Image (cartoon, rainbow, N blue to C red):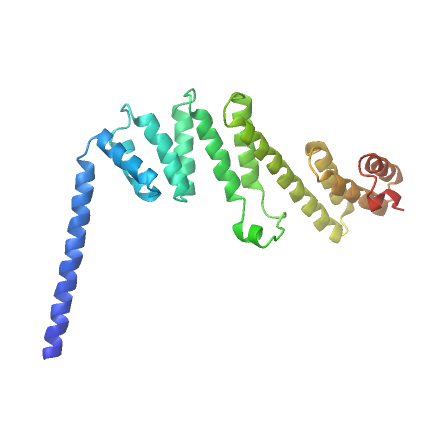
Length: 256
């Protein structure tokens, strides 16, 4: 009987504690809801400075919904992009970026939104585990890299004097090499299956679309091997000549 009373008491205390926590959370939400835009923004900035990005995003989202046309609205949206990004909320980051670009196509900070869109898409294509252990996964889907390249291209073409343009160009070079590596990986896949026409076409695609990447040499070598297996001596000879001029140390120069 005593055990039953003890358990009952524990249950009551637990319910009371839960109710108290819920009450405190409700009071905090109500306190936030009753603040003005500037007070809320000051709180959000403090959270950002302290690295509490999730809390900052929550407060900024509240400002954005309560004061969508206020004097702080543009800055709130820009800070919200950063807060979502730093808290790892990819979907919300991209959605906020797209909304800002759509509603403010001529705003001075649209270049920042475009840059961040490229950064987010580019980072989605990276894999920390693979980088740490140097695992080559060039054959993984490059769709996010393609999106990032398009984002950076829009930035560079539409805002060539942007402070983000130089970094965007460097990122574009990295992405082009990534996309070229993907084509090489696919070409080698075809070679393993003796699909020589498909392999040669992938190699030629690298030459045509990514001529300024280190993947030109393996592309030429793939074309040489593929043309040799197809008996296309003239095409093989042209590829060997190009390889000899640009990569004289390649073992494929004397390919028979």
